[in-house]
Structure formats: C-alpha cells, structure tokens
Length: 176
Image (cartoon, rainbow, N blue to C red; front, side, top):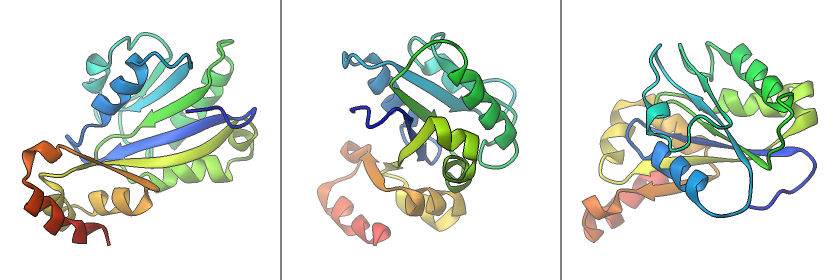
C-alpha cells in the first residue's frame, strides 16, 4: 500500500460472517510495512467481539456498536471520521471492517457524496472476503452476501484449503 494523495485512502473490508475479515485486518496491522493504519471496526450488538480478536486493538481503532454502519449509525461513521481526523495523530491509511451482515454500498456512498468527508478521505477500494467453503449457501440464502460480492472491486477467496480443487473450479460460476 502506498499513499496516493494528501487525502487519506480508505479501504472498506466486507464479507459475510466468518469469512476472515478480522484475520485479514490483523495481517495488515501486524506486518512491518512502516505505514500508520487507522481502523474503524463495526460491530453488531452492544458487546464487541472482533475488537477482542484484533491484535493491538487499543491504538487507532474506533469501534461502532449498536448496528451496521451501512444504515442505522451512519452519523456515527461520519463523527468517527471527523474525530479520527482531529486526534492530532497522523496516519497513512484507514481500513473499515464492516459487520458480516453489512451492505457496503451506503458506506462507500458516504465517501463519495459527503463534501466534508471527501475533503479529507478518498475511497481506495472495497474488498470482499469470500469463504470458499460456504459461499454457495451464503449466496443462495443471504442477500447481504450478494451485495457484498457485487459491490467489491476486489474479492479475496479465503478458506480454499477447506475445499478440493474441483469444487473450487465449479464454484467460480458464482462470481460471473
């Protein structure tokens, strides 16, 4: 990752429940890349679960509870972005991990349509973690999983070790 402008690049990480979003986030936060990364993590419910799973979670991580940032607490997202900008700490990137039930499109719209947010932040991409073992069932039963995959400009296929190569090749039709 390389900073592209004075605006802070933002990557939204989505994916259905259990797809590996927090594992990916931990990977970014624990690598020696010499970049300062801020994180906004969304939790569904009053007690955060993933926050306990993130290594070094006390530094630069804002956790939004009580709903999905895609709709019910979008005002909280805007406030968190403003608060993050005014902490006096500099950072090179912002990663937003959505809840596994979030539609990432309204979150992206915040960065594309809110003038104050556009002044400070630039949407860099929407990454969707996909659970190779369960994607077929998730797409059949969950409109959220469909929205996450359709919205992403990058899909990361995870848990491929849990399926055989033939099954994986047959499943590629899900993404066409």
